[in-house]
Image (cartoon, rainbow, N blue to C red; front, side, top):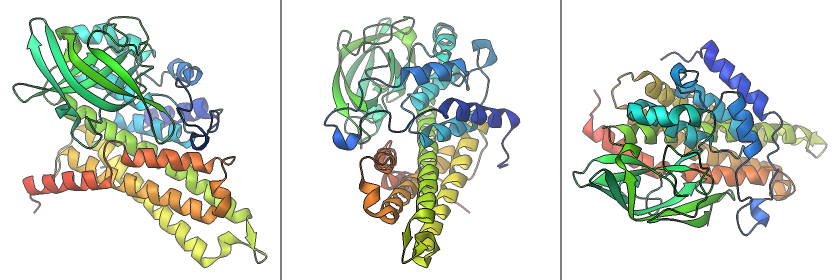
Length: 391
């Protein structure tokens, strides 16, 4: 594996830094002071700027108006977004769109890809299952009925469910296969221009939930919901590839949050004085900061390994899912340790709701557990090692 980024990947990261430069992490009410969601909708103005900068179509081919880049470029952009706590469905939208391009029918790609690459319709993914702890593809059943699929089940904690026109829902068929259904909470199909009202079409309802970071989520309930066959991706491997991309993107978000928090901590420790000296000069403080720096470098190395496996399709001793699991283990444990150390070194100042650090702490906790915490992925890695003995 070559850790050197291409000029195109670096250009995407540079464009992202330009778009995110003016984003304020505390632009919405604090989740610590809000009983409900911090906002009813995501940052639409920022979303439009991302579309204008062609950052929503990074993974699309040129025939759909995209840049034809890969998972590595997406993770570079996601890392920048997390540094400012950007409130946009960039990961879910990009991953869903890339999956449609890779596994969807030509007819579905032609209907959806170019428009979604411009930011409308907005796509999201139901990837948490019924409880957040069970496999998402087992939470919904799908059976074929003529020219449609009928879905039954529940998906919890769907991000941006009230803003998305289409939710990509993994479901299990009677033949024990996974399919991806593009469900419209607002009652429109994949070819529609609607933005999704969240009111629900026949058999589809959305109930409000709130994330640890204060964002508005939705519990998606499907009761004999019919989805046209043309809006279902039935290709083998589609859900597994989508989930690996989502998990890897979550690792990029963790890295961005961790890097920004460690920088904040270093700046604070360099200014805060005790006994006439900056606390950064104290050995105990320096050692803790150094340990967290090592965490970040491990998070970074495992992230790029996973992203490279997805982008290149290269073979290895384990399937790509093994590298993805390792990356999420480091991301989950690492980002937790970084924010906990930051809170400790900031002292009481870190708990001040007028200071932005507590927002990063809330985001870190959300990211740590999203799509499975470290324990979940350690178990998955153990299963892979048992099925693919090394040596």
